Every structure is written in C-alpha cells, then in structure tokens.
Length: 97
Image (spheres, one colour):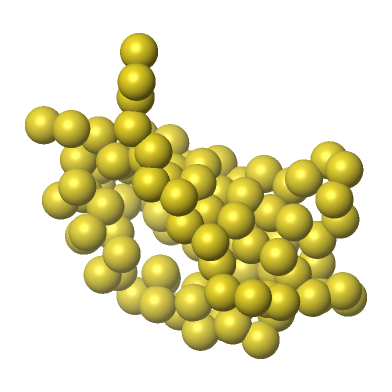
C-alpha cells in the first residue's frame, strides 16, 4: 500500500481572497473527516498574496479516489471556479528517502 500525496496550488482573483478562504475552510473540515485522510492542510503563501496551497496526504490511492468522488469536492470545484485566475495546479509527490 502506497500513500498518495498532493500539493494543490490555487491562484485567487484579487478581491476574492476571503471568499476562497471560507470555501477552503469548509472543504478542509469535510476532507479531514474522509476515510484515509492522513493530512489536509490549507496554506497561504507568505510572500505572494492570493496564492494558496493544499497539502494533502492520503492513506492510499483508493482513499484519494474516494475523496475525489465526494460531493464536497465537486461542490468546492464549482464554487471556486469563478474565484480562481487559472485552474488548480495539482502536483503528485512521492517519498524519495
């Protein structure tokens, strides 16, 4: 069984930061309760305003797939679409040492 780790970068439109923070707060709370969630952190870039990063760790690929099929994930995607400058950037990571 191999863990699934993601870094998701979101660039928010100027003036929409607070709304995105609210949406991310709801998403994070529900995602942390999903089976297989090891870590779900919402981070804000300290030097670049309007840039957010999600650090997600899942027990395995099946847990991540189950999470991505949840209503709260699709609801966030719909709610955030008009708030973002560009589509979310998703990086898949693996441990190397």
